[in-house]
Image (cartoon, rainbow, N blue to C red):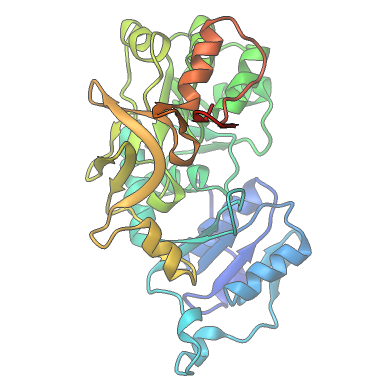
Length: 376
């Protein structure tokens, strides 16, 4: 278990917002866990965030402090919570029990600050830890950045809660990652499809104690699954979730070789079955999720929150999906669906078809305007 403790952080009041810009690694892990244990609100940012971007986020969340490679710095911003009685301070007050504000990348619009409560992250971390058997005698490994929800909740908090040793590889290199997992006896470890492709290019020997890799964050193609199976067998479990629902909401069961071939190789790989207490609803093909592990809302953006979460607690994911053998299969984003003269086409299906037809390299299917059909 990573040891926590940060004297300067301990001087901050409970609920203070702390913006964190640190490289992935032990210092970031210790800072995040210290914030969590001290009941501070951590706001982790990408380590390459510019000073201007960090200052803008700090002002936006009325941060009390910033932690970077030079240490902890008190901000010159007014303490919003201290003036909670002021007429205009309601927008700046943080909800009770808030643990993290995770800002989206902003690739599809303005950055939104996802507010995650202690209750929600503890609930999801406990479920994923139980699902993968994290325990003091079952180490877990990750090569993913702790400033993203996946590694933060499952890997960092999951091992922190259970006392499982965490093998943390700050920078991914295939041989080094597998060597570290082998040396520490990791039983499970995390990866994403983009890194999985790099792993297969190198093809290091499988670590002795490793049972399987957990992949998420992007769809796994049948081609990539086939290449993985050819090298390492059926030792892969895909999952799916959003930061708004605290990381994982679905995870694939462990499959034998025949089951893996059937689900991952012969058809579009599914992302799994719902975690305990998680409900799935398909609304006109869109995946809706209802779970107790749900965001409190978007920071200072009630309009976006209302557009994303229904009054009765359903999260509109924006992803399209269907059920197959009781497992969720994703078909792409709702905004990416191609309407060709009334026929609905999904980019992932088209790309899979091109791959099966022998097209190699990197490619993507997108909608283009067509006068007669509308889209092609």
